[in-house]
Length: 118
Ligand SMILES: [Zn+2]
Image (cartoon, rainbow, N blue to C red; front, side):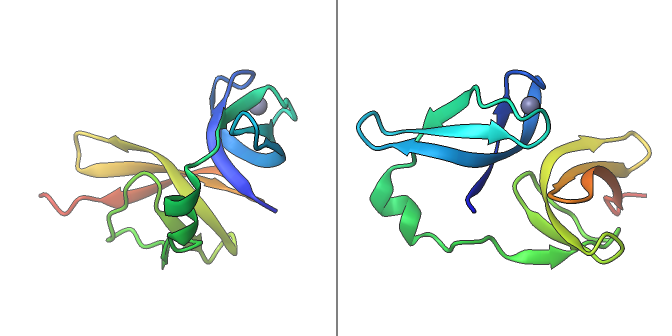
């Protein structure tokens, strides 16, 4: 099943979406929010040629507090036994970085990493 991270107008945040239908005439995909089941979201389908030649999945890294991540990174968390996608990064003044990660089964988790600055 195709999944997307996309802004849900109902949840008012970026959530995990599943593909409901693809309209090739208008080049639009219709998405259903896995959180609230709203199917109101739709987005322009990706330009075909370029997108499909990209690797299907970004490289998955295992979560470690010493690593640094960016939005869109996929990371595997061995406690949750789940691979999630980084949807938001918040830096704290004390050098901690809060990585908000959306896991398909475990849900939204906040994982802390350290920037290495003392
Ligand atoms: Zn929603």
